[in-house]
Length: 221
Image 1: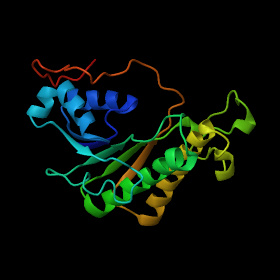
Image 2: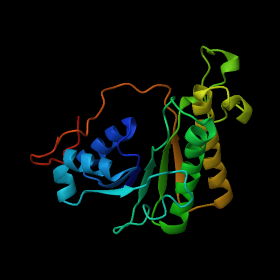
Image 3: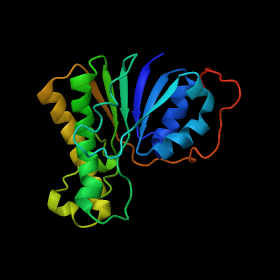
């Protein structure tokens, strides 16, 4: 069993991740923005909360300096961190404040907190996006095999055009910042980044309890 910190536990990808982590028997603390969201997830995963397999940390604003300082401290200590928390909305008032800063500062912030206060963490997995790799100026590039050298060349000025460009920029800048942190800070953990082009599937609902019966830690087929 691995002790895992999962950020943004009520998000679309994170909700599926949380479901799978618990079913596979891992011990999880997940961050959410409000106490209200803690209540909904507590209801949805009642038995996991009661048996101590699932806990919560409230992080209202991931862009705030030190936002994850308390969340990364755990007993028993964390061995892995899955960072999925990042803004993914397009009805915004301020492109930099609402999309770019949370993506970048949230990513760098949690890496700083882990290095400072969670020396037991060996791996950090960051959910990025294919938007950080795609170069729209080159078209659809049929047959091109994308590799680590592929980056979206979006600039800060271009990011101001609209929310879609800002989302792409946020993912690009955040991932670059993560790799720069790894190279410059030489932490005890390594980093893996996931860049999905699209994510499909049902929403995992936290509106009603789904685990009131007997818990099985059998791995899903």
